[in-house]
Every structure is written in C-alpha cells, then in structure tokens.
Length: 97
Image (cartoon, rainbow, N blue to C red):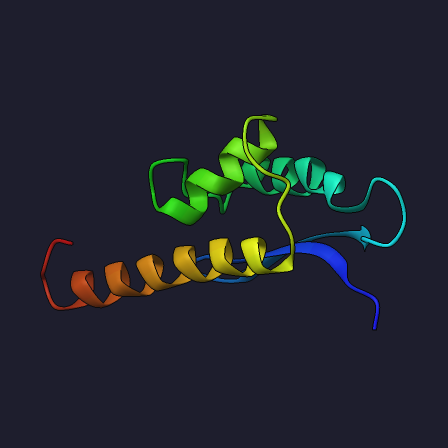
C-alpha cells in the first residue's frame, strides 16, 4: 500500500483534502510543509487558534512544527473536525463553546 502525505479538513460546505505524493519518495514526510502550507492558504482554513489540530497544521506550514506521519495528520484533521462539529451543534442550539 502506498501512503501519500495528506491532511483532511472539515469546513462548512466542503471537505478539503490537501494531498502530496508517496512518502516512500524523497522528501518523504518532509513534503508536509507544503501540504500544510496549501491548506493554511485556503479560504476554508479556520486559523491557528481554532483547535490544537489547526495549530499543528499552522506550525508545520511555517516550518516550526513536526512534519509528522500518517497518525499525526489524521489526529490533526480529526481534532479540527470534532471542534468544528461541536461548534456547529452549540451554535444551532444557542450555546457558546
């Protein structure tokens, strides 16, 4: 199985997938700086302070964080997704998170 560097990201209208290439070829997981940078520049990106996952994405995009592995990027995307959905539910019922 070939694993590509990617980040899955939830937004209000679409799911954004910022994808690189196989991690078996150089620069391996180092490609995640570019993958994260493309996501940070996307209009759907919620900002560094939105969630821990968003902070990890931002830090990597700016060369300050880990380039990680499949687990790290799945965790970042899942963390963002959970915070996003909790905020949607809270807003629907008039609660502030």
